[in-house]
Amino acid sequence: MKCDKCGKEAVIYQRYSGMHLCAAHEIADVERKVKKRMRQEKMVIPGDHVAVGMSGGKDSAVTLSILTETFGKRPEIKFTAITIDEGIEGYRNFSIPKVKELCDRLGVPHVVVSFKDEVGCTLDDMLKRERKEASCTYCGVFRRMLLNKKAREIGANKLATGHNLDDDAQTVLLNVLNGDVERLARLRPSRIQEGLVPRIKPLMDIPEREIALYAFLKKLPFYLGECPYAHESLRGEVKDMLNDFESRHPGTKYSIMRGFDSIVDCLKEKYRQVPLEKCAICGEPSIDKTCQGCKLKQRIHIKI
Image (cartoon, rainbow, N blue to C red; front, side, top):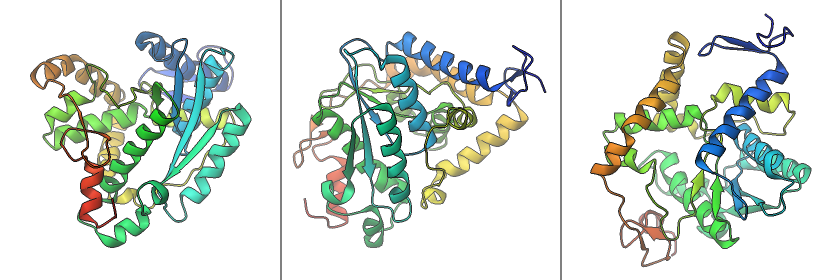
C-alpha cells in the first residue's frame, strides 16, 4: 500500500483513521499528537526540571527521545532519567543497559534507584516471603513511591512517564470492572499535593503499536522483553480484551478515553480530592497515617 500523504511505501495502516502512512509521516504523526497534547496541558514550560521514569522499554525510550528533541536546546529546561531497579532476575539486568545507552546518546543524566537499597528487599525476595496478591501490587506500591521520592530529591518539579493510550484505556476499564469509581476520579487530580511531584504523560494519545513502530523507525535502544510477573496481572486480561475490541471496532480505545474525559469532572465533584498527610513512619505522602509502602513492609517483615 502507498502512503496517503506522499505516495511512498506505507509502513502502517491506522484503522481508526483510515490512513496509510510511510515511515516519515508515521514519525511526524506521532510527534504531532505528542506536541499537541503537551501544548494543551502546558506539560513542559521554561524553568522546568523534568524527571523521566525510564524502564528500558519502548514507551519510556520514546518519551525521553521526544522530550529531548523538542526541548533539548533550551537551557532553561532540564531532564534527568530515573530507573527503578526492582531486583527482578533476568529482566532489569537486560533493560537498564538500554536506558544507559539512550541517556548517553541524548546527554541526559541517569539515576538508578534499587528496591534492595531503598526498601531493603528485592521484589524477587519479597514474593518469596508472601504471595497474598499479584506481584504487580507489591511492585507498583514501591515503584511509585521511589519514583516520586527520587524525583523530589533531585529537585524535579515534573515527573514524565511513558503511559500511552492503551495504558490509560486499560486503567479506566480496570477501575470500572473493580467498581472503584473514586479511583477513577483520582486519575485526573484537581490540584498539586504537597510531597507529590506532578506527573505528565506525553504519550497518552498514542496507541502502543504506533509507539513500538516509532521506536524501531527512530532506531532507539530499548528492551523487548516482558516482566516475568506480567501474566499474574488482571491488566493483562483487560489488555487482550481491549485489543480484541480494537481489532473488531477500530477506535475503541480513543472512545473509552473520550467517554472518561466527558464524565471525569462530575466524578471529581462527587469524590473530592483528599488532602494528603505525611506517613508517621517514613514521612512520604499518604492518605492514611501510615503509607501503603510501610504497611506492606510491616506485613512482610521488612525492617523499617
